Amino acid sequence: MYRVGVGVGGTFTDFVLFNEADRVVSYFKQPSTPNDLSIAIAEGVRRLLDLAGIKASEIGYFGHGTTVATNMVIERRGVPTGLITTKGFRDVLAIGRQTRPSLYDYGVRKPAPLVERYRRLEADERLGSDGEVLRSLDEAQVERLVRELIETGCAAIAVSFIHSYRDSTHETLARRVIERIAPQAYISLSSEVLPEFRACR
Image 1 (tube, rainbow, N blue to C red):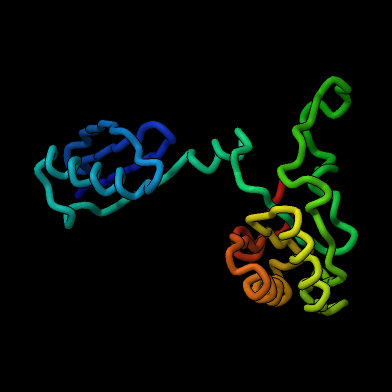
Image 2 (cartoon, rainbow, N blue to C red):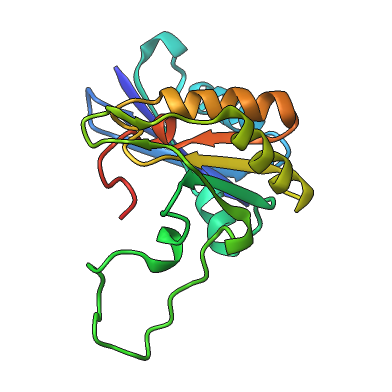
């Protein structure tokens, strides 16, 4: 059996083939296809199989990773994005956490949040830490928030409500409102991306 690893970068896509029988590693790279990254992956895997003289059925493991999204975030090349969060938590992105390197170094400069403050809006909803609904989500309010974000030019909207890892109902309801008001917007829910306690470190 063989193991295949693919690493997609903005310029090149790397391919690694590991033969589990003789423990031989072979690799090559080819240009990435930015308009559709899957093209370079498919072509590269086909080429990898041809070079090794093996069939796809002989691959027991296929691993895939990419730095494309990471680079986009670091270089701040994403589309204008809005955030809808629980009332009282608008500034968490700017404040951050107490646990950080060089806590007392006044020379450390924190990077600006990926979402500007005027695009971070609050919904008056709340779940308890056990998932109990303490304050229900008001769909009409979410509709107003979405319209406000779209007016500022947002092409993507993230929804991150407190304790949504316990119950994603409010975030799912917010998604339905966004889809109705702004069907062209890209939507990201924290309960889908990483439903964990203190996932943002």
